[in-house]
Length: 222
Image (cartoon, rainbow, N blue to C red):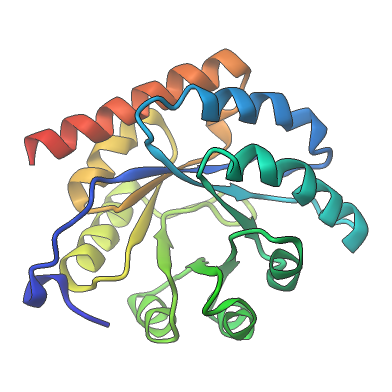
């Protein structure tokens, strides 16, 4: 992995990474997702992470097929949470894998044509391992299955450490709108917005605009 410090790599403007709630019925999210992406006049949204409730392969494929054009027609990447082989078969832009073992098992399926992202990285060593194995990004601060996550101070520290040393982009998980600007200041290339974003269509539009504005403020003041 190349070092940003040593190579003085220019940092692109940070962007948003939307994370859907766990989807049982794709049709229930289509309208809200269309509204959210259409309202992104600043081109601040880079990707959508599609979280699918466990189901048979045909059902999962149907959900991806329904939501893929909503996302991809806007020039936004569609990344599937887990299900690397399904992501490859359905034309999604890639998959997000949780944990080193899941990442290592999936990377050959996805690379080099699709995004292979990694989260659930408990230690610095875990992050460096997936980086060496070809991760397109690493994610820090996302909740575990029980909804727990490290303290925000710990998330900021991990983002800052990675951003200072490594060229591979990192995603910082914001658990509220108030965490967006600090994550950008710490060096996050992307800021993930999760379940709290999706209360209703108008809330999504307002929160995305607010988050995008905080990206711009931090970038301007840097």
